[in-house]
Structure formats: C-alpha cells, structure tokens
Length: 153
Image 1 (cartoon, rainbow, N blue to C red):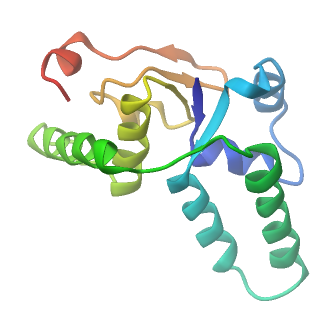
Image 2: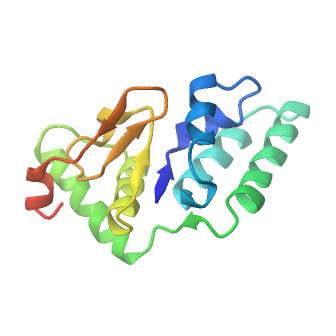
C-alpha cells in the first residue's frame, strides 16, 4: 500500500504535471495507491481559498472526480488508532526539536497504522516517524530509522 501525500495528488491534477511524477504514478498498480481524508481536506481547503470563478469550479470538479472515482474505496480515515500514534509522533518530534504540522503527523500516523509507504516530495518532513517514504520526483526511497520503531513512535 502506498499513500499519496497531498503534494503528489496536487501535482497530478495540475494543468501540466511534472512528467517524472506521472511516470512514477503510471508505474504503480492503481489498487496500491491510496489517499487519506487529511489530504482530501487539504486539497478541498486549497481550492476553496481560490477566488470564485471558472478556475475554482474546474479544480473543485477535478478534486471531486479524484476522490469519488479515482480513489473510490481507497481513502483512509484518521481514526482513534491513528490519533494515538499521531499524538505520540507530535510529542517525539517536539522533544527532538523538529516539530511537524498536525496534518503531516496525521498522515504519518495513518501510514503507520496501515503499514503503508508514503509517497511525498517532502521526504525530510517525515524523518523520525518510522514511515517508509518514497519521492516520486526522483529522490528514491527513504526507510524509517530503527530508533523510531524501537521507541514505539
């Protein structure tokens, strides 16, 4: 299972997406690609912030198509199990002097609960979370540290 971070989904729906991201996505079996409810919220928020008009309407329709069609049945929720992991990750990163955003902690936690790899451009934002990460822009995989797993983060 590969969870697509918000930046990967956003790139895929751009008018002219980065070719290497599209190649990476095309190389994956569609049924292995998932998104989170957190990503849905971030993307809907980004579109809703745009001025009213055709561009916002077009993007809103595109987002809806991706959520209801492309990822039908493949949107992971932030549930109580993920919330426990997410809270722990936030505290660990704060103690390490590397705080992370709530959204990133939620996405990392969902990946941990589902033992999923995260596809993101922001590889270093997930350092120390115990989540395996891959960069569709070409940086390759980054595997979780043994220390993070040993701590139970």
